[in-house]
Amino acid sequence: MHISTKPCRTAPDRCGSDEGLALRQIFGQFASGVTVITSGAKGSVHGMTANAFMSVSLDPALVLISLKNDSHMRDVIDAEGRFGVSILADSQQSVSDHFAGRLVDNAAAQFDHPGDTPVVAGALAWIACSVEQRHIAGDHTLFIANVDDFLQSAGTPLLFFGGQYRTLSEGELSQ
Ligand SMILES: Cc1cc2nc3c(=O)[nH]c(=O)nc-3n(C[C@H](O)[C@H](O)[C@H](O)COP(=O)(O)O)c2cc1C
Image (tube, rainbow, N blue to C red; front, side, top):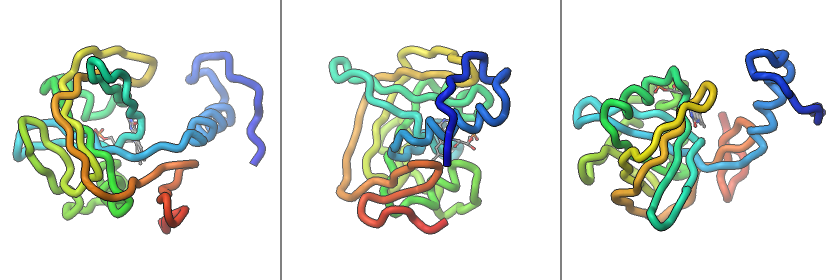
């Protein structure tokens, strides 16, 4: 599909819907893994699927996540001051769909509590974080957070590219 190379020079809400869609498709060309952000006390944990995650600094150890301003997760993190990042394994597509609100699969919503911060059971890796900085950027809020604890397990990651789940070994997964 042809996507215009003409940049959108106006605020996103003033861009035509075709340009908004084109920009979304351009952003989707950046392949990523898939994480679930978790926060809240045991028994009332909230989870949200997010691929806007990046490592920021090794010394000190910092990570960044970007959450929609109208997401419930943003309010939970503001209240808790900490969150977990669980990097999903390629067997966890249903976990991603569950925490993105695409599918109700309560079996997918299993948490571990290795410390004060909840994480998703069976993830490829998890990072427990405490919020250091918060910046509102357009319709999203960026949280920069200290890495307090982490653990890696064996396996391969779930990937996201062009709006589709992928795996390293099999290419695109069935929907
Ligand atoms: C693969 C994937 C990646 C996503 N990444 C993000 C993200 O980085 N930030 C975000 O705000 N929403 C992201 N979403 C959408 C949220 O998961 C979705 O809006 C969720 O329902 C918000 O939950 P909450 O409002 O209950 O916290 C993503 C969805 C999918 C399927």
